[in-house]
Length: 87
Image 1 (spheres, helix red, strand yellow):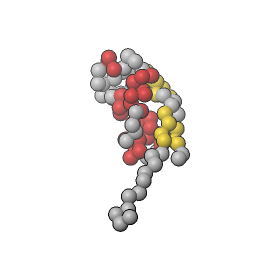
Image 2 (spheres, one colour):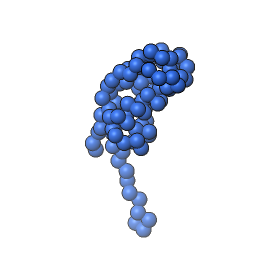
Image 3 (tube, helix red, strand yellow):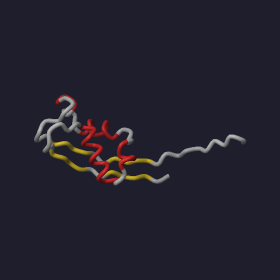
């Protein structure tokens, strides 16, 4: 089982109408270069909210000038078992 790591970073909100999940997606996409994987990360938004406790109180859209800490996140490869119809 291999693991992929999204590096930690910070992001200053410079555009209107950004949400925490969009900021997380953009950071993950930049690190992974795979839109499908970046869009289906389990727990990354929650880890970002834990690293930024006051962000949830600000509402859905982040105010301009807010600084968001994006934590390092490890993606573990899922092990799948193959089910064969005739076994």
